[in-house]
Image (cartoon, rainbow, N blue to C red):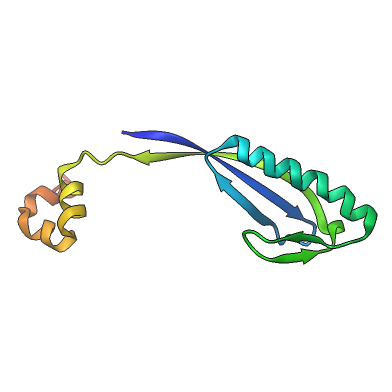
Length: 115
């Protein structure tokens, strides 16, 4: 079993296909705030014929005419909750230690049986 987590990704899609992931966050409000800022800056830079500048997550300045879209995409990520005793043992002591304590029959499913 696991829990689902929403992740919001702010993207600048460029005509030259060098798309930029500007932010990944679980907080929709911060994603929307950044999206609004970028969206408002885009026509300004086009009108002024000045480079569109980013300082996070990369430092870049490029022609604002390269931008085709600025958007927020949403992803759902399932986080696993490890209640499995073998997984807990492995996290605590490592794989080789865990495997040395197991009987081989615990790991094998005995394969396909063809009658």
